[in-house]
Length: 295
Image 1 (cartoon, rainbow, N blue to C red):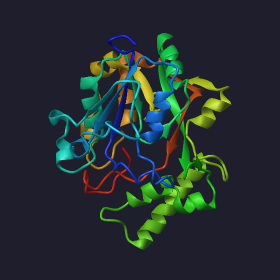
Image 2: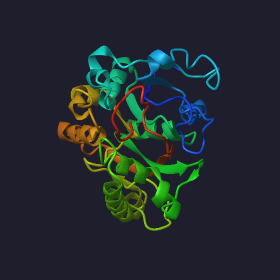
Image 3: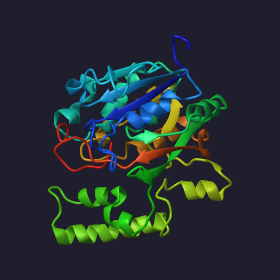
C-alpha cells in the first residue's frame, strides 16, 4: 500500500461495544465490519472510526477482537468544531461525518455503518466503479439474530424497521394508543416496500433488479452506504449539521447537493455491490437523551 491510501472508509458510531447487535449479544458492534475489511481483496485503504464514546474507550483497537489488524485505523472523537448537537446530548451524525473528512486522505471516501458485513470484493468493485467515473452506491439487506430478516409475522411485531419508527413517534415515548396507531401507519408504509414474506432489504433493490441489475441513481437515492470523492464532499462543504438534533435526512440531503453541484450522472447502483446490515439497538444513552433514528 502507498503512503496515501486510495480509499478512506469513514465509520461513525455512538453505540455501546456489546449487547447492541440484536440476537448476537457477545459480538462487538464493530466486529462484523472489521472482519469483513480484514479480508478485502483491495488493500489500499484506511479506516477512520469517529466515535462519540471515544473518551470512554481510547484503547478499543489495542486487543481482542481487533488484534493484528492489517490496515491503518484512526480512532478519533468528534472534533470540537463539529459537536454542537453532541454537546447538547442530541443526534450528531453529520458532525461526526464532517470530523471524518478532516482525517481522510484517500481519493475515494466510502461511508459505512457500524454494524455491517460484506463480501471480500466490495472495495475492489467500488474502486473500479470510481475509476470508471462513478460514485458507487451500495445497497443493504437486513439480518436479525445473525440470519436474513423477512417481512413476516415476527418481523411485523419485533423488527427494527417497525420498532424504531414507533419509538420515534413520541418524545417522551408515545402512549399505548398512539403507539398502536403509529405502528399501523408504519406497517402500511413498509408493506408497500416489502411484500409479505420478502427479504427485508434496501428499498431501491427491487427497482435495480427490475432494470437488469444496474441503474444510474436519482438525486434522492443517495443512502448511508455510499462512495464519493473527497474533493466533491469538500466542494459542497460536507454534511449539513443543521439537519442534526433529533433525527436526520443527512444522506439524502448530501446526495441532492452533490447532484446540484454537477455530479448527477455519476451515481451508480448495481446488485453486485451490497452489504449485510445487522439490526441493532439505538445509540448509547451516554450520548443522547432523546429517542431518535439510527446513526
